[in-house]
Image (cartoon, rainbow, N blue to C red):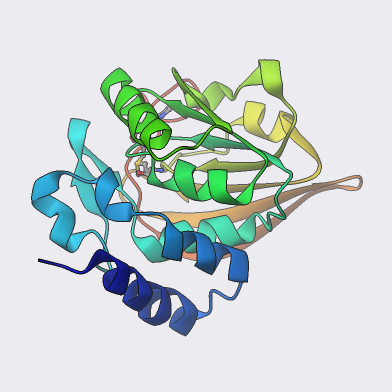
Length: 214
Ligand code: SAM
């Protein structure tokens, strides 16, 4: 039987801190959130391993390091309004719920959205809302957002997401082809958009109006 708390400590030390994730709040959140509850029971022993894992609907829960890297790049202090595109297992949503004021998350598969919602509720999170739909359109009714995180790869940055960023807001998004992408950090400043490449990544496809066709 795996000691999940110990596995989490090892994950944070060897996969995150050792690779340069320094934001204490991000490290603490990843020490706290029980990642094994977000994966199938048969895969729980691997929940803290250094790779993504399959979830329902042929989707994935991202590698812990990628979750940490993307989260850290949003520079959350605790009061922000954050939008996540691609709820998947709900693990990243839980990390965001620990670190931001309010979390809005969109998933295109109803089954995944409902399951994530139920796990987050059971864990006691109240500052989040999950919606089923095409996240490439963003969440215009509640825009603007201080942070937007896209956890699926897209051929182009969806314009609605840039439009829904607050001034000074940050958007992190994998852009590239269907099999490989670069992770971009976009900052919206008064003078315009600033874009930084955070390195190569591999995500499942963002399928929607501003992403890939089916
Ligand atoms: N953040 C997730 C987690 O912590 O488990 C990982 C998500 S997985 C890598 C990407 C997710 O994006 C999948 O669940 C997929 O169904 C979803 N997705 C793809 N295109 C989407 C779209 N247009 N709108 C919303 N969700 C989408």
